[in-house]
Structure formats: C-alpha cells, structure tokens
Length: 422
Image 1 (tube, one colour):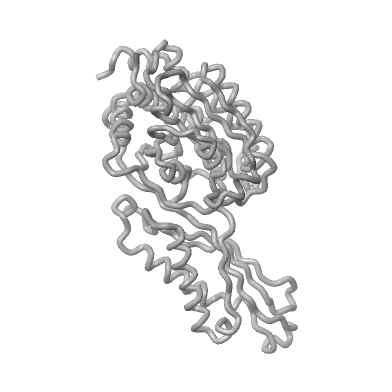
Image 2 (cartoon, helix red, strand yellow; image 1 turned 30 degrees about the horizontal axis):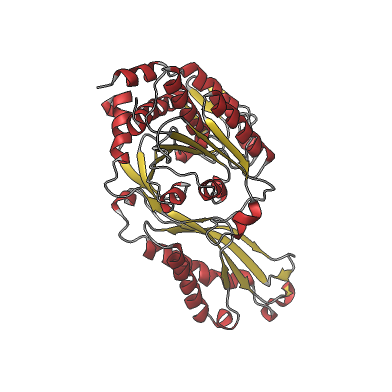
C-alpha cells in the first residue's frame, strides 16, 4: 500500500531522536508570555534551519496586533512575541500543507502536586512526564521528526510544506493571529494538538467573561444596613446555570459524546476586603462555551441578555445592575469544511502507517484552539496529534513516545501525499 518514497521516508524515522528531542523541548519552561517561550522559538528556528527549511523568525509588532479589531484576546502579560515559520523547497506560491503547533505551556501550578520539577522530564518506560509533554511539545516533535524523515530519505516534494510554530495559544492565539497577519498561509493545515488517537475536525469556542456585581458596604454587626455583593450574585449564578442548560440542548453530532458540549463555568470569585465588612463588590470571571458555527457576538449577546433579565427580576439588582465585560481570550468555534479531502487523507495516512486498527474516528472537541484562526483565514484545518488532552494542564501530564512515533509516521505520509513527490 506504500510507494517506494513513502516506505523510504518511514524507514528513516528516527525513534531515538524523537525521544531525545521530546526531553529537550520539555526542559525549556516556555510558559505563555515568558522569556523561555521566546527562547524556545529561537531554538526551534535552529532546528528548522538544520532541516534545510527557509526560516522566517520575526519579532511581532505587539501594538499593531493589539489594535487590530479582529485581535483574539490576551490574558498573560508579555513584552514580546516571536513568530516562526519554515518552508521546504517546492513548487507554488502557497504551501500545499502547513504543520502547525504552539510552543507555549500553562504554568505548572502547585509544585507540591508534582513528582519532582515540572520542567525536568521524567521517563518511566515508554512514558514521559512533565509540563508540556502532551500539550504540546510532543506535537512539535512529531512535526520535526516527519520533516527530518522526508529529508533523510532524499524525497523531493512537488509542493511546499510549511511549519508554523506559534506562541500564546493558551491565552487567545496571538502567535497564530500574527503569523496569518504576516501573510503565511497554506492550502491545508494539520495541528498536532493531543487528540488521543482521534481526528478532530471541529472546535467549540470559548469566551472569557467578567461579571461585576455591586453591593452596599456596612459594618458586619449592622449587616441589615448593607447589601452583600455575594448575596446579590446568587440569582445571577442561577441564571448562568439555566443558560448553560438551554445552550446544550440538541448539540451537533460531532459534540454529542460530551455531557456538556458547551460549558459555562465561573472560574474565580473575588469579593470583600475585610471579614468584618459587608462586601460592596463581587467580580466573577468565567468561560462561556461557543457552539459550532455560532457567531461569538451572538453568544455574548445571549449571556448579556440573561444577566439583564436576572437583574430586572431582583429588587436590589434592578436598581444596581451587574455589568458584563469580555476580557481575556476570545475563542470562536471552527471546523474543517464538510467534504474536504484532508480528513480522509490524514485518516488513511494513519491507517497505512500504523495499521488499520489505528484509523482514527472523527469528532469535535469542547475547547478552543488555533484551528479556528486558520479556518477563519480560509485554511482548511484539522487536529491530529499525540497525547490525551484529559491530562493536559494537570500535574500528571504525560505522553507516550509510541504515540509520538505513530503521529510522526502519519505526518510523513500526509506530507508526501498532500504535497506530492517529484
């Protein structure tokens, strides 16, 4: 079932180098917005150059990106953002395929929850533990390994292949946004986010919201003279729960496997500044899930309407209404166009490279990613990569090297079949 070029490229996949590179990348603590995030971009630029790719490494114009009306939001502070794109040789102005991955990782959280330093990778048999192991240093390694195998086999590609390595995916997608704004595009894109052996062709969106709820301060001993902002918030919390239930009726078949496909969650509550004072302000920050194909503006309007209705039905809030704002990340939904051949190309490549038992099923996922930015830019995009998102962002994050190898083998065939060979 394989051509000579495909068999040769798969034979040149270096599994030992995959393991070494994974450990190397995890050891760079590239938290979103940190100096190490930029360090990793420069490190990866060297990797791409050694693979013979033409490299574009640039410092992004942050003020210009932040002022763009379509800017997707930002949560982590940053002083710089570096873009990185590599291109193989080949015909055509537009790459036939983009291999995309983000370099940033979330903070490790409580150090005591980890079995050792989160950025000192630990190996147990086939499994590597550490922050960023599956989300998504493993995906970056799979890209590098696939490109290295094609080069080592001496295969000449007809179309060009691009590698897009981006910053800031975890807090909105400034890296992908800036990369696309620079003019880097392609005919199709594979993002190696952790998909646990499935093919992800749709992402739900996620919008960060903030509720500011007023109260009236008073001495706690004279509580009746005040109005607790905590008490004032409670009817709003019930309204949000009812909104979540309404928005999750009859989800898309791609999302039907999830108990709550479009979750609405309040993540932080801040109220009061003194135990003996009735709190006069509560601020709640949360996340609103965006349905597939739903405009973010419509999702915002629906939440704002429910909050307004809850305020109107409450004696205190009717006269002192809560306000809604939208700080932080704003992830629209996105999906691969129905019937696009990329789905079956990646699915068949996985089966041909790893056995037909590994042929991935298709599904959507209830979280945002860079997929929606590429899809919005007219680049058909899907996700397929090593690891399981259920351990991402946790103190037990890990990935199996076998999964990285399988993903790299799939990418080798995808590259050769989508770009073509000479």
